[in-house]
Image 1 (cartoon, rainbow, N blue to C red):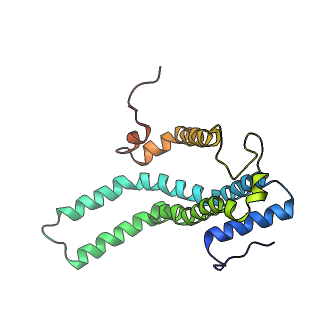
Image 2: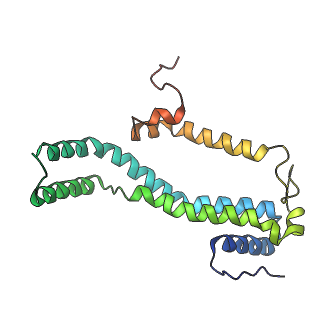
Image 3: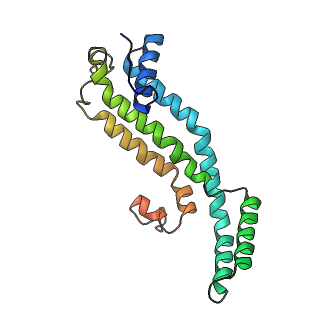
Length: 195
């Protein structure tokens, strides 16, 4: 019977509906559909990640000039008048145009990613309530029953390993983007020389 909900446009229900319909359309096991859907979402979001990374890199180049503008504004005795504030804002906007950056672009990825991630997370969490028999045989490899937790903890360990690997691959860019807090991300001294 088709999955129905009283909240037709509620995120997790949309995720459940999409996964269920893709499974019926392709005939793949649920594990394959879930993996394929996750990969498709990542591929679709990739241009946003590239744009955000490019913007973050450019913001790192703008920072010294922004700091100079801030120092110039702080040199003004007392509270700057409206004309001084407007001149400072125009210089800041000109600097953003020069480097083709926008501080709000870096927020675009979390605002797009979070609702999709939360919808998929809760949708997958609730799916066994709606399709218990289908998911009990929809797994693959070492987890044939998707209604149970991974018995060998391979998936959580693989996710943690991939996350650490992604941090390691992108550590130079993270360090360049924020030299003060970047080393704290890696929990080790970044000033040591490599052998």
